[in-house]
Each structure stands twice: as C-alpha cells, then as structure tokens.
Length: 471
RNA sequence: GCCGGGGUGGCUGAGCGGUUUAGGCGGUCGGCUGCAAACCGACUAUAUACCGGUUCAAAUCCGGUCCCCGGCUCCA
Image (cartoon, rainbow, N blue to C red; front, side):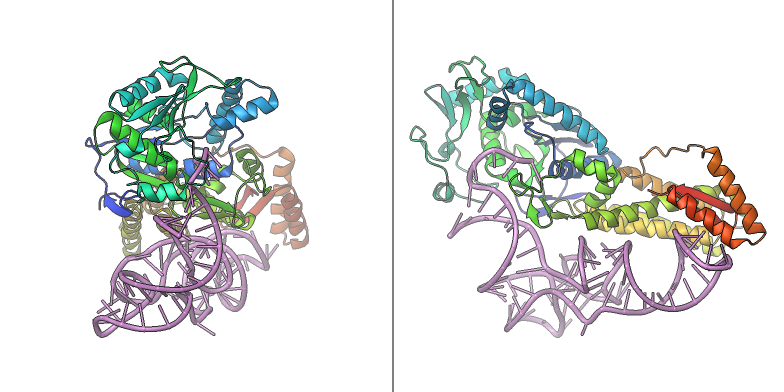
C-alpha cells in the first residue's frame, strides 16, 4: 500500500505523490517566540516529528523546515513590558524552544530560519508583488491586494464576501479591501526596524513563511503543515501571496493541519490558568509518556490532556519496556532450535502480518492510534514467545521488529542506565535469596517491601530474581 | 452569521457499507508464583448523540435535528 494523506485543501485523503521522486519538502509553521513553549506546541511538533520520521522510514529524502517568528506584535509588547529589547527577548525564547524540543525527543528540522535573518528576502518578494500589481503602498505600509487573486479563500472554502462580513476587526480605512493584509508595517517608536524602499519598518506576519519556504524549499513544496488555528488567515494569505509571487500553482501540494490540544476539555490559555509549559510537563512526566499520548490520537483530531490519561500512558510505556527487557533477558538464555517448530513458524508469520498491518495503518494518513494498537499486538506476541520459551531466532525476530517500529515512533530511545546496583542493595537481594531458600517468607517479603520503598521492584523468575527501577 | 473539527462500551480510542464493534486502561475468573510482581489464557462491558431515508445489510452513505470544540483578532 502506498502513502495517503488528508489534504486540508480538498478535505479528502489523497494519494501522496511528491514533486520529485523519493524526495519530500515539508514546511511547518513554527512558534512565535514570546514566551516559554507549551504542550500545545509540543503536540504540534511531536505530530510532525512522527510524520517526518515515518516519511524517512518509507525511504523518502526529507527536507524539513520550521520557521521561528522572532518579529511580531506580541514579542514587541512583551519586550516593552519587561524593558527588554524585542530581538533579545525573542532570542531567549527561541533558545528555550529548541531546548524543549530536544527534551521531548523531537528530531531537529533541517533548518530553523528566523524572520530577522531574512529581511532582504522578504523585501524582495514584496517588491515583486508590488511590481506585479498584487500589493500597494500606503504611508509606509504595504498591503496585499486580496481582490487581485481570483481564487482567494480556496483553502478555507470561503468567498471574499463571507470573509468581509465575518470580520470582527475595525476596518482600516486606508485598505482597498477590508481583507487586505499587511506585508510590511511602518515601525512605530520602540519597535524593531529595518530600512526598506517604503521607509523604516518591519515585515507583516504572513510574508515570512512565503520568503523562507521559497528560499529553502523552492517556490512549490510538497507538504505545508501547522496547527489548525493557522488555516485562516495565515495559511490562506500565505498561499495567496506565494502563488501571486511565483505565478505557479499549487504553492503546496498537501496542507496538513494538526488538531488542537485541550486541557480538561478547555482551551489552554493564560486567563484560564491552565497553561502548561513543556518544562512543567517534563517535570512531572517522561517525554516518552507524552509521546505515547500524542501517538494515541490521530494528528488531525483534537486531544484532551488530563493527568489521568498521562498516567495510563505511563503504565503502557512501562509495559512496553518490561517486554523489551524480558525479551533481551530471555534471548540470553534461549537455545537455538534444531528443527523448526510449527508453533514458532506460526508466530513468526504472525509477526510479519502484524507489522504489515501496522505499516498499512501509517500509510493511511499516519493513523498512529491504529498503528499503536498493532504495536501492542507485537508486544503481546513478544510476551507470548517468552511465556512459551521459544527459540532464540523467534525471540530475536520479535525484539527486532519491536525496536524497528519503536524507532519510527520515537519510543524506546531512552538510554537505559544499566547502573550497577549499590552494594548494600545487592547484599539485600542476596539475603532475600537465602531467606527464600530456607523458606523464610516473612523475611523475604520484608526485604522486598524495603526495596520497594527504595523504588526497586523485584521479580522472581525461573532464572532467578530480577530487579528494575520503579518508573 | 460564515467556515471547519468532533459526538463510538466505565474511561481512552480505531473502524467509515457486511467477517469477532481493533488496541490500551479498568473489572472478573483461571494459570504461573511460597505470596507477589511481571506475564499468559478466558470472560466482561446491553456502545455507535437523536430522528428519518437509501440498502438484502449502516457506527460507516444521504437528509434533518441537538450538543461540544475551534477558526473568522495574535495563537501550535
């Protein structure tokens, strides 16, 4: 089966065909860096992390760009409140954004371009748009002429009239059409500024993405992604100006939008006081727990963040790790089989089947919940193979398949510290062994309880007592 | 008002015309175990927001209704 992707433009799941064979260009709208990143950002970039990982797994040569908006009204406002330089403030939060992404185990994009680093490119595009008659200058501001684009509104399936009547903002009289948007803004006192043919100013919001995607990925790209909230006006405007600039359609072959994250059913916002930063999140939960949480819902659907759900994911993650640990242990002890056993043959076939189903699920618009359910089937097969004391080759096959898929999911990447246990604990375990040998269950249980209070879980297995840290 | 996304068992969450209503969590029982833990097996859950229609057959398609969430202003 081949990859299919749901395209916001058509609202349908379409066959994925990159512009250049085996290559994928993907641009995702990054954060406006005016504050610490929150778990909503985490959700979005985690989703695209999964998508790019899978594209790479499929053998595509992926070029992935995520922009950093470091010039923006909100940044300026924050900076003025705190007496900081806007670009300095942006730099600070750009750094924390990257740190947060790394902490979440999200792979770096190939490029993280900033707006402030691309002013000449932006000016060039605006000049071309003016030359082509798609933009006009008013008092040092430059606006995009929406009415010049006959198919404006195609992404959101809205007509210009509908947009006009729905506008909730006070109309700027200087605009030819209320839906016209700023490409360049005349800077006010205390705002960052760059010189331009229209005077000192700064770029508008949408133009940066056109400039940077063009620069790094070309005038036409395969996938453009972002949070659902960006569809309008941002992506609609970006689309209009990019196509106007290049004269080529489509600007983007596939538009992908991720569902929103809510907290206890409500939108996350400062005013509701339910704002959770990535730092807060990781203070309480492991990054892979969050990843499993994201994996368990389809990227396009909304997700609701609750402590209870995270707790479930934590348990599930523990289960996965247990199985992998047990498989490794069993492989050490298992024998190679002389003659192939029917049961083993059947199980091996089952592994291949499950993997195939899993890949099909991922091919179907990155259906991670379905894929995850197949992954759990793989885990179950692993446990079964252990319980049935199967051969080394069968056990190895399950383990390898699990690890292969886990890597696509970005799971099981934790460096498991195989620290030697402190001596006093080793002694306790030995003491317990001796107690068990003389059937002194009371003493044995006491030691087990004591170790539990030290976050060490003991498991008595046929091969002897195993220990693990309580997560 | 306009444009989207949703409403599936106790919770979570797939399925998008018909094989068992996936998988996970939870619950019950059994196995393993000295007891646990982990794991295996069996079972459980009277589920598809509502009302019509199409069809031999609908959670799945069509029409209508209700409810929730988001966008239309900065927002992942």
